[in-house]
Length: 96
Image 1 (cartoon, rainbow, N blue to C red):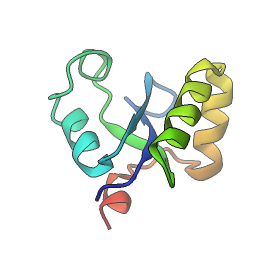
Image 2 (image 1 turned 30 degrees about the vertical axis):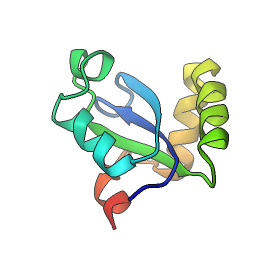
Image 3 (image 1 turned 90 degrees about the vertical axis):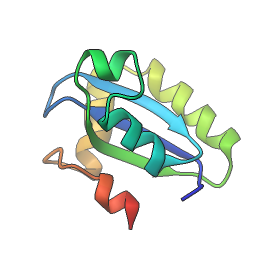
């Protein structure tokens, strides 16, 4: 699935979070889950996709990701809970 996507992953409900952007969300999230993406997500065991947003262009996805990364943590949590109040795993939803 090649589509620009902004996503947030979490270690657990209200745990460590990571915001990212990719043009291949299924592959990229899988890389995080398998700890193939070294860095923040592997260090803090961040494996659960809790929020994502698909975009028409990579440019718009990059702009959105940069904005979200500057947000306060409480704003990111509100964004997650508007879409996914129980912080469920959304990876398989993305794969369909």
